[in-house]
Image (spheres, one colour):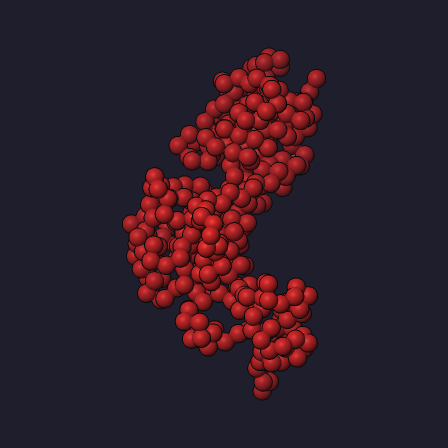
Length: 349
């Protein structure tokens, strides 16, 4: 039977000291071990199938090296699960493991989920939601280092740091892309008005026109839900039986499903995309945006990056890496990314 590799075996293969291996694999390599040496250590550990003894490590540090994650419905979401994936990437790279509990959108289960994780001596907690939204902070999250991902404290005085997408800038950059293509009559189907992300994206749309010094029509902004049929119904009202001169040359949608509906309406009416009408989505939803015909230009929500940033902030607090002089920030905005494909083109003459 093969002997299990030790930290000394890793050190010999990487050509470093035993203490350097300990620092790197316990997440404390930055600032203590050269980047090239860190890379050699991780490669050697992978080749030897070595991982630190979690029990011994927790006894030495008086930590469990476990992070509890509570989600409203992210675990069963085909899209927002990337937040947890990003968080888990960072946790594992720092020698932590994650335990996830999903409340299936039942807020009454939040407190019990938090208590269950606290009973298992987690070192920290993260709350993750499907879609940007305010939440009431479960009081148990205030007993250990905690962070919010894709959501924020609805209390007037926020109690926890939150990491969310920069929706205003995303809406502005999406609109600027269309303006740069020469479009001036750009309609916006903005999603459901009560959703926190919707007014932020509308603000970005307004900001883009203001920066460009171009006026826009208020009646081109409509809140029409989030689903394919909402986009289709609204687009048919906007485009059907309308003189071409009164038709918008581009439509910006608050998510990719709305954009599908708009594209279906355009096809029904015999309009070419992007020759007659450019369509902009939002989210870059997996297996939707890139597979549409034509492929959809969209703003990619930085879900994985949100998880990574939230977990990084949480582990810095747990391991005492936060600055003791600077005031703690309560918000991190993660940029969205413009993905240009074939559904947008120059404005028709």
